[in-house]
Picture (tube, rainbow, N blue to C red):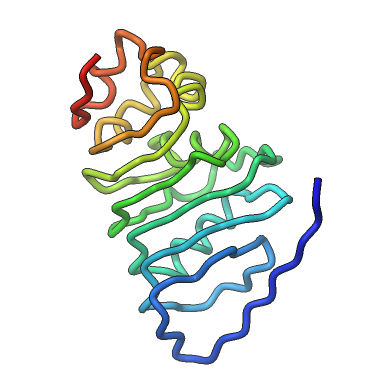
Length: 168
């Protein structure tokens, strides 16, 4: 495991359209102009961190999470986190806990037609082989999903991802 540090220097108002490699040390703030976000850390991101990100980037349309560490806190009692403008959600390099963070409807409210990138293994695990009611609502909002191995789709996959057009 390599160790790295990122330093971000910016002035207000921050007018760039993207903010990359945000870590757990992110202090928050309001970044109205930022549309593209990437989160990357060797320490786990907890639910309160995602709430801070959602509040700090109200215009966010694209979010990438790169973190293989499982979350330590379940935080079932936090408010549902809303991402009203999100169009692209990349969880290819994320631990299953983060896939769950975004797909469970009492943790996250995704807008319709979000383009989700995730591994089929992660989706199968988090959705309990596409039978888990708690993930059904957000999965039904997904417009397009990219997987590593399309041959391993469950027969319930199409019932779960209503807006996906993939030849099986």
